Amino acid sequence: MRGLFFPVLSVYNRFKARTRILGYIAASRLVSMGTVLYEMATGTMPFQGDTWAAVFDEIFHKSPGPPSRLNPELPGELDGIIGKSLEKDRRLHYQSATELRADLQRLKRDRDSGQTAASAEAGTARIRSLAVLPFANLSADKENEYFSDGLAEEIINALAQLPGLRVTARTSSFSFRGKEADVREIGARLHVENILEGSVRRAGGRIRVTAQLVSTADGYHLWSERYDRDMSDVFAVQDEIARAIADRLRVRLAYDQPLVKRYTQNLEAFNLCLKARHHFSKLSQEGREKALQDCERAIVLDPAYALPHVVMAECLWGSTYLGFVNPRESLPKAKSAALNAIRLDDTIAEAHGALGLVLGTCEFDWSAAEREFRRALDLNPASALVRGNYAFYFLRALGRLEEALTEMRRALDLSPLDPLFSSYLGYLFHVVRQFERAIEQYHLVMELAPYFYLPHCLLSATYVQVGRLDEAAAAAEKANALSGRHSMTLGGLGRVYALAGRTAEARRLLEELHSRRRAGYVPPSFLAYVYRGLRELDRGMEWMARGVEERDLNIVVTLKTEPGYDDLRSHPAFLALLGQMNLQG
Image 1 (cartoon, rainbow, N blue to C red):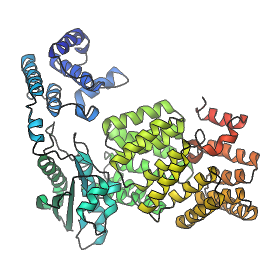
Image 2: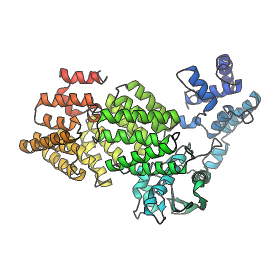
Image 3: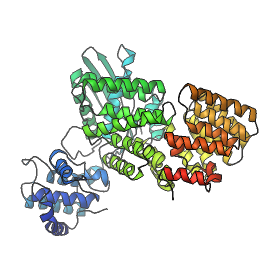
Image 4: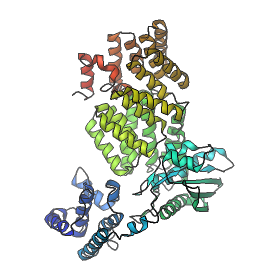
């Protein structure tokens, strides 16, 4: 275990040595002691900041997360002891060092004898994994699907914060929507022992929510409940369901506080944010535009509501990566939205993750970007989104490829059926030159999501690397058809045609890309693909340089590691581009 609490006397010795310093930043020596314990258990301070003012603000206004979220090896009982020692309400925290010492000694005794409540319960219930399926929308208005999805997603987010419980991410668990699948099959595919399913009926100002917990081993119902409430009680219903699941699975709650965080008191703003997240999940530009509109309306209704700003940042960055919008216009807006979210609530992991994306890929401040990603992962280690983005858009961009593979695998442990991150794993195999593993991974994704164009697009690039140009062309054609002739797949297809000697076809696609760019935004990388396939090195480098200048994300996160650029690595212009992005060395 990392920095644990035994022996107790060594903690006290360290406490005495540091009391004089910590006394300046804590209200009492007992809080100082709690700070020492937290640092020893997790390797990090509970209250952090770049200035003393920021540290004081953390101390007086914020509560650190349970230590076991940072160090899963810790016993749950220690969460409670440290939490009580850092409690801000004097009536609730330890009244004396003797009381704290007694609890630590009791925990040490119980751990040594193997008689803690946790180990006693382990023999009867060792349930550690759960998937929450999309709640069925039973409302008369089928458009209310966003609401039933939102309730399920809020419960996922709440349960994912509990130490000792692995909760499958929304992307994977929601992939079973509308499918007739046995719970045993779902459990096997998601690697979970239990499933939470339910339904929502919304009529006027009333809601009816039903929920049931099912064992995937035998389909046996472990728990079920029905809630008939006013709409104003929707937050309480979510929290009650989450607490009931935690209780049934015997997951220890370290702190007596709501599991479902209430970010706004304005129900209309809450509804709009649920709609925005629903539209964003569609992964289309139309969906992203609708999501942005809903976020803007939610912010007007409640300017202090942080979550719409998070969704705005994610929408703007995603649209930029896909080449739908000009990065010079969208990325500053994405940064502003992420900063607004953090200003309103510094504890939202995805806000820090979104800021990390922009700081790295737009401003080339990779150190600041890593600080934001690390902060995001400290806040929510169970976020598949943060881990996947950290792996693919940060670690890969810097050439830290083994770390990238590790983090992407962790993201897929949390969301095993995510077709996007599964495709990204294949591409990471590609950039570490494990081409056959990459090809195998892409085919697995195609079985998982037959209508998703990305694995075909990436497969084509890998076939090019191993010299299988006919198969590369077939894969590129399939990607182009599935994408509806997206500019990215047009560029990839043009490159393959050029390499295969189908020059006339390649030039026709190149002219189509130029025509599209004259009418709207097309990332320079998509044109550079074709010029490089045509062996027009100078033109290719010219468009790659434009890509860096315009912050074309397909250039920024790819240039340092893509095997297709190996022939350029000693070219002065190529080295200059890496230098502009602070990626040299």
